[in-house]
Structures are given as structure tokens and as C-alpha cells.
Amino acid sequence: MDANILVVEDDAMLNEGIAYALTKKGYEVYCAASLAEASEYLKQPVDLVVLDINLPDGDGRLFLKRLRKSIQTPVLLLTARDAETDMLQGFDAGCDDYVTKPFSMAVLLRRIEVLLKHCGNEDSRMYRCKNLTYEYGEKRLKKAQQEIRLTATQIRLLEAFLSHPNQVLTREQLLGMVWDTYENYVDEKALNVNVRRLREKIEDDPREPEYIKTVFGIGYKWSDRL
Image 1 (spheres, rainbow, N blue to C red):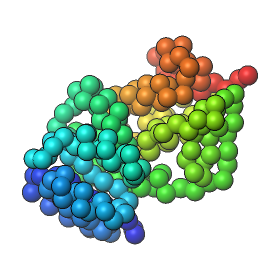
Image 2: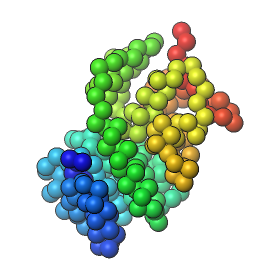
Image 3: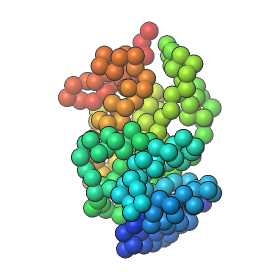
């Protein structure tokens, strides 16, 4: 599959299991048991990082915040913390997806596949509406000519909305578009968190959104009517 993945996990058995599953899928895998080891591997480009939050030499989220200052490599956080506040902090730190333990290895592999697929797409289209401009090829969003940093998941969510302007999308539809979800692979909490964060980045007043409208009991709608 011509992709290399860094797995940062201090549980040796879990690290070995993830590495074995990824290798069977054709990925090249590097394993680190600490943030210090991960820093050494990241001196060379990698295509995706699977990062545990709790590591012996520090907090993975703080490490990710520092990492985001220099690279935009997709990062999937792996953790036993499943509270919404933990997830919010993970997305705030810059993660692209969030998987809680215990997890299905098949689901983890699928999430990794989706992240790699979406982050590798190229497109020359451009979207313009009011004070927003989005370049599909470069995955670049600007608001009033100011660039807005988005995670890979937020980019997929934005593109799902832009592909269906002024159309109500159910939560199930959005989950399928953003995460290629199967019935046993549903995470509405992650969707809600990403919608909230995307609103905070693009809306003048997230409490009274102009673009991402909530359709109560159903889902959301991207509104670009002038």
C-alpha cells in the first residue's frame, strides 16, 4: 500500500499486535514505546501516526500540540479515555481521529485506511461563498483571506457539506461520508465534536451559525444561500 505508519504505544503486546495487523495489510510500520522514540522516528516523513495518550515520558496530547506546529501528518489518538471532555481535548490538540480501548482491530485498520485515503486525494476545484474560500487540491480553507487550520477529519467533514449544499444530511449519512462507517462502526460523539469545532473555526458566531445549520432530530445542513 506504499504507506508508512508510526505506532506509538508503550504496551508491548498491543504495539506488536497493531504492527502485525498493519504489516499484513501491506503497510511499513515503525514502533515506538515513548515520545522520545517517536520524536526520533519523526525526523523522517511518515504517512500516519497512531499515538497513545498515556506514555511513560509524557502526555500524547501535549506532544501532538507541539507536533502540529511543524507537520500536518494525520494522527489517530488511541486511548482508554472515553469521556467527551477527553475527546474534545484530543481534537483540540489536533488529532484527526480518536479510538478508545478496548477496540476492534478491524475497525482500527479501517479508520487508518480511511485517513490515508482522504489525506492523499488531489483535486483542482475551488469553492467560494461569502468570505470563505476552499481549495480542494491543497485542502486549504481561508476566511476573509486568513488561512484556517483544519484537521484531516474536519477537512472531510467540510468537503461532505460542500458536496451537498443546502441539503439536509442525517447523522448517519455524515458518518458514512466522513468515516466510511459500517453499522458496527458508529461514533456520533466524534461527529458532534467535529461539527462543533468546525463551527468555531468558520462561523462569526458559532451559537448562531450561518453556514452549518442544525436540523433538530435529523442532522445538519450546509447553507450557502446569499
